[in-house]
Length: 417
Image 1 (cartoon, rainbow, N blue to C red):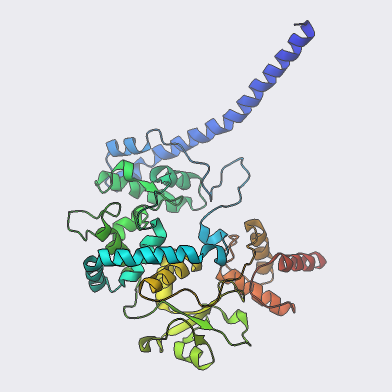
Image 2 (image 1 turned 135 degrees about the vertical axis):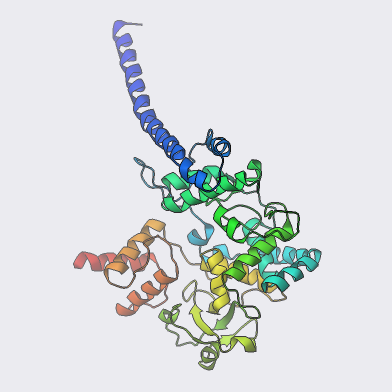
């Protein structure tokens, strides 16, 4: 090798060393900060009754999982959220007929298998067997789905890097308390990306609030005991004020003259008043007990899918998982287990805008005073209503669905201001 080639090789090696050092240094610094944060949790863990031995065992070798969504990592551009399916899929994608039908079929078989237990749960908590079965089916496919993450790693990562760090810090502390109290073996602590565990998906703090020892073996086991898991889900729903003897929602055929901007949870009227104005139930007839209950209109895909008159029990299920599509999934599977059928109106194919585009749209709407909720990049109820209000104010087709065309209109209007 010539002297010139040797010199070039040396320069390249030096550049590689410098590059590697620059790449590794931030990661090492971040890991050191994460370790320091873990160590700092000891006083609060101790207050919850966690022993030093359990604490040290729990944090030993724990490293952050930076592949999780909803993180803010210093020096790293924020990744587009992949998040929960409820928030990144269209209604037609999330509420697939084949999936709903399959889970309902399994749910009917499991109802027969666990009939006595489910009857006892319903007697104690007032929550129908079909509803708790549907939640079990949606959360873990009746226990057949292996949760993909280590709960301690997830909760620690979200507690340090997450957008809701304080919330997950508390959940991580309670996860260590679960180990201390002997409620779960370390190997069973598998979770979703949000840290929820067990057959019916409880966060650690929810476990301490709502878990039930329904099989009488001495401790609530939502990982292996079907009675405990289902009773715990029912207890949580009852605690959130489930109304026994009432439905969660009714699918309706809306009047042709409908203004989709009245599909607002704050626009409540007695169910009988909606029916008197031409909102015709399809799929199931209204119960007499529901006629006087306050209801509001829900149109999850704007004009491009079914419409629903939703009641108080709708919001109870939504408090279990804060997503309209989740409630519709669970509610429809529950209806089918109880003898009902699929949605009557088909879901049309609509395009779900990218999260960053939805965030931009929400900022435009907020600047115009039409939207005052979180800038979260999700096409939720408030966003759809604000889009409808914008369409109404600007003479656009009023369908209450966020599209690229509406966003382009907002951009053009903003550029002219």
